[in-house]
Image 1 (cartoon, protein in one colour):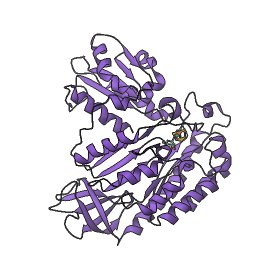
Image 2: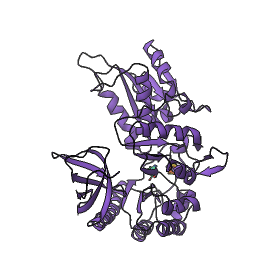
Image 3: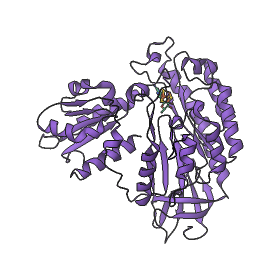
Image 4: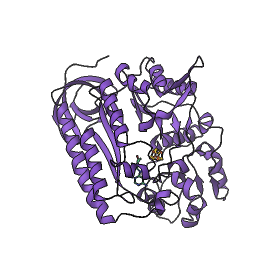
Length: 428
Ligand code: 5AD
Ligand code: SF4
C-alpha cells in the first residue's frame, strides 16, 4: 500500500510542477514514506534522514509520511530536527499546503484522519508505462490483533465507493495497465453499492471489474480469514480474470496463541477456508504471513505452526519474528520470548516454507501457461513476467515487449523464479 500511496503522492506533486530527481540529497524535496509494522522498518527512517545531507552541508526539504509519521507525530521532528513535514497516511492529499508551510519555515504536522477521504482530493490517475498497477479499495482495520499497529495508524475500516474504483480502474487501463491488484489492509472486508444501488462485497467488485475490456488480470491482497465470504470463494472458480492466488495470513498454528493474538479464527476454521477455496479453484496458490515468538509461545505452540504449514502447503509466505510495538496489548503481555529462541524458530519455519515454495515451483515445470511481461531480465532479449500464480518467470523473448501476454511452457524451477520458453507470439 505504501507503493500505491507513494505513486499517488508523486502524481499529485507532478501535477503541481515537481519532477522526479535521481538522487535523494540532490532533490529539493524528499518524502520518506514509512512503515511502522515492525520495529526495524520504523527505525529505518531515522538512518535515512541522516543520509540526506548534501556535500555543502545543506539539505533538502524533508517530509516524513506514512505510519511512522502517524504513530510518532511531532516526536519525529524533535528526534530529527531536519524534518520539516510530518504527515499521516490519511492526510497526504494536503502535502502541497504542508510543503508550502515548511518552505515558510514552519514545522508542518498533519496527523488528521479526516472523514472526507483523501482520495477525492487527489488528482486523477495518470496511468503509466507499466502493465500492472495497484488500486487501493479499502483502508484501515477493525480487527485489532493484539500485536498490530495498523488499526491505530491506518484507522478504522473504510471502503472506497464503487463508482470511484471503476473510474480509477478505467483510467489505469486507458493508460496501458493490464493487471490490477486491489489493495486493502483487509481487502476482503470491502463493501459498497453497485451502480444500481445493490449492496456488494469484494466479489461483486471483482465481477464488475472483470467486465472491463483491456483489463486481463485481477488480484487482491491482503485478506482476513473471517472475511472470506461464500461469494468471494465462488468467484475464484467462476471469474477467469481473477488469478489463482490467495494471500491469506494465519500468523500461528496454535489456537491458544491465535486467541491471545485476538485473531478471531481458529486453526480449524482457517483450514476449512483453504479447503473450500481449493474446491472452487483446485490449482490456487496459497500464500501466508507468520509470526514466531508471540508472547507466551511455547515450543509446542510453535510446532503447531509447523503443523498448519504442513497441512496447508504454501506456494510462498512471509514470516517474521514478533516485534514489540508500543501501545499494542501484546507489548505488555507476560512471556515475551527471547531473541535466540525466536531466531531458532524463524529459521526452522523458513526452512519448511522454502521447501514448500521450491516444491510448488517444481510442480509448474512442464505446464503451459500465460505470462504478463513486466520487466527486462539481466540477459539480452530476456524478459521477466508473472505467472497466474505470481511466480516470476524468465523467458527469452526477442520481439516481445513489456506489457505483452505470452503463452509459454515452464522449463525450469528455482526457489524464487522459473524459466520458460515461449510457445507463440503475443496472445490477444
Ligand atoms: N511483529 C511481527 N510481525 C508483525 N506483523 C504485524 N505486526 C507484527 C508485529 N508486531 C506481520 C503480520 C502481518 C504482516 C503484514 O506483518 O504477519 O500479517
Ligand atoms: Fe493488523 Fe491484519 Fe490483524 Fe488488522 S487483521 S490488526 S492489519 S494483522
